Length: 337
Image 1 (cartoon, rainbow, N blue to C red):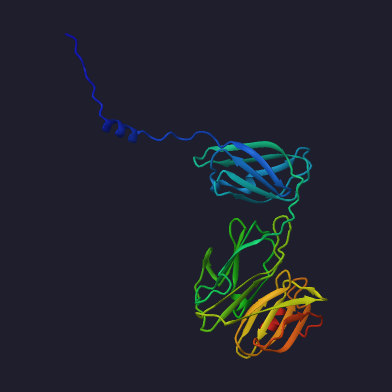
Image 2 (spheres, rainbow, N blue to C red):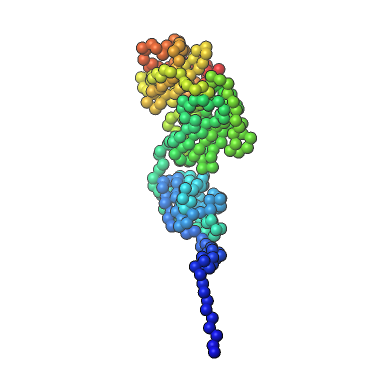
């Protein structure tokens, strides 16, 4: 009599077997799907899967003209949030064919070897970097510790330029600065114990701190900022109650990026003029002296100057401040003592 075996497989056994099976590893290298020359200095590479961004290194890429007469210097390599697109910033390219050579890995350490031709863009990047956020925001209150300022831009900044900034009343020599890894953020703060770690520091009561980042920074296509970045905060719970407006001008034209200082024996209040020359300021109900300054070539010296000896915010006078030459002192810091 033949033997008959019956195999009984329960659903629990099937689920257990599924759990025990190892995941199928990815053995395929990432494939380059598109090369998109956005402009003369930016090239986007689109892949079919996420890239191991830790493996990205500008030195692993070369961009050489097909005639072998030009090699584009790579300034920066960044990645998009989906990790499938990376961006290469270069020196300006001319409208010709180039060979892109490089290597990178996916998340499973599969290495892609890139050897592709593309034609450079004819489009020149003429848009200056835009400021998209400031921390702390202007008019922040109740801030008496952790002195820092963070500026984020719409695109990467050329880090070879040293930032030109003004801070009052803190000691400028104590302020250190650093860029974020993608060069789109710039942070200022007290002396850092280690990278990305800014020390906490307390401020005395009734302190208002003003910070101006002058428009000397450029993007990777050498387009310079068009206006100052400005913010201020106070250790108090409220700021001065009165808001007043005015215009700064030179030779009957609105003057941007000027510095206006309202001072008396108790305080200094600092603001800047916008691209249309307008400015606003928060003041107490007391008398002020007004000094307006302009550094036309951003060499930290005063080139244009104006002074109004006596101003009260409750007066009906309209603040229309005309700049002129021949300032009494040369350095901007001399007016902030």
